[in-house]
Image 1 (spheres, helix red, strand yellow):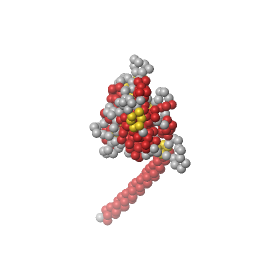
Image 2 (cartoon, one colour):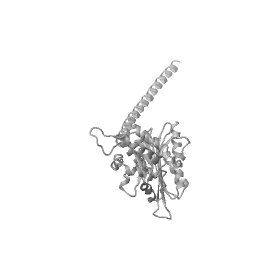
Image 3 (tube, helix red, strand yellow):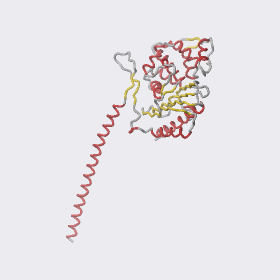
Image 4 (cartoon, helix red, strand yellow):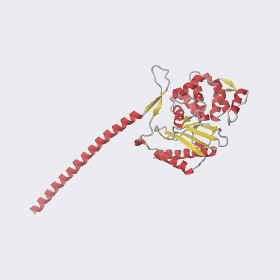
Length: 349
C-alpha cells in the first residue's frame, strides 16, 4: 500500500516537471517568435518607408512651403499585393475573348480609401485624344482661384474656330452655334460633358498658354503641345484624377466643381456600361484614329474616371488600341465590371 502511494507521488512529481518543461519550451518559442516578428515587422516597415515617395509640385514658386500632391506606393510590394486576384481576373477575361481586333490594353486601378494600386501595362503609352480636355479645365479653374471673373468672361464662337474641327480627321461637329457668345464656364461644361471639340477650340484660343503649360509641369505630366504624336500612360493620366479627388492642386471648391462636371459626362459606354445602374462616375473618354494605313486604321480608345463605390471609391483608367471601336468599348466595360465586383467583394468582408 505504502509502495503504491510512493509510486503515485513520484509519477505526479515527474508529470509536473514534464508540464513545466513543455511550458518553458512554449514560452521560449513564443518569445523567439515574438522577437523574430518584431524585427521582421520593423524591417518591413523600414523597407516600405523607403519606397513610399511623396509626389510634389514640380515647379515650386514658394519660399516657405512645398505643395504635396500625394504619395506613390510601389506595386511590387508582395506583402500587400492583395490585388493580384483582380489582375489575374482581368488578364484571364481579356485573353479568353481571344479577339484579334484588340491589339493592346493598359489598366491602372487605385483604391482611394486604402491608397493602394495595381496595374497591367500601366506605363504603356497611348494617344489620349479628348481626355486631355481635363487639363484645359484644370488650367481655367486654377486661374479662377485668383480671378473668379474669368469663368464669366464671354467668348464668341467664330467661323474660324468652327473650321478647325474640319481640319482634323474624324472630329465630330460642335453643338455650338457660330456667332453666338458663351461664357468660359459654359464652354468648359460643353467640352467635358459633351466632349464638344468646338468648345475646346474656343477655350484653347483664349487660354493663357503659360498657365496651361504650368499645369503639366507642376504635375509631371507630358505636355501635349510639345509633340505632334502625343501619348500618355494610364498611370500618368490617373494623377489628374488623383489631385482632383484629393483636392491637392486646385482648391476644394474647384476640385469639387471639376469632378461634378465630369460626373455629368454623356458617354455611357466603357466604364459606365460595366457598372451597376446608378453608380456615380466622374469620367472622361478619348478616341483617336491613326489612319496612316487607310485599309486598316488603328483606333485608340481610353476611358478613365473616379468610380464612387459606397465605401471604397477608386480610380480606374483603361487604355486600349485595336481595329474595332465596339470591341474596344466592350473590353473597357468588361474590365470595369470585373473591377467593381472585386472591390464590392472585399468591401463587404
